[in-house]
Amino acid sequence: MVNTMRAVAKAPAGYKTRAWGEAHVRRILSVSEFPADHSSLRCAFDNQNWQVEEASTYQQAVASLCRARADVVICDSHLPDGTWKDLLGHIAAIPDPPALVVSSAAGDEHICAEVRNLGGYGVLKKPFNVNEVQQIVFSAWQARSGSVAVA
Image (cartoon, rainbow, N blue to C red; front, side):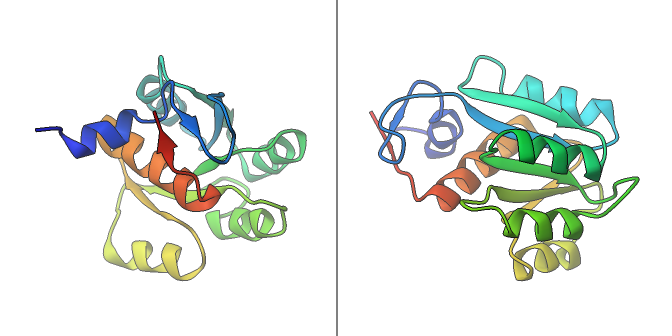
């Protein structure tokens, strides 16, 4: 029997998608003032078709999104110069916007509901669990792009 969660988590690596037509590197923008968050995300997507870009502040994230398209943005719930809500507002104005996932040490029902109600994809609880990170990023990317992985 195939472990569905593992298959979903690993699906981006080497797969073709209907939206893109061929396998390519997808971009994650990690927005957090904590270097450990960036490092954890890089480890989660090591040897996969995902590139993790880093931004430590809201302003750096906006600049990064102006330079290059992201498929998924993972934003810490607290930033030194803005909030995830500010970033969500900026993302909403982008044509073909990336999915926003909020990371939080609390990860309680309140923030989960708020993120979903305001248009974000979901919440990742810190410290990160590799399988959970891979699953939510791939699911957020699929939901945003309408892509379906095919062999």
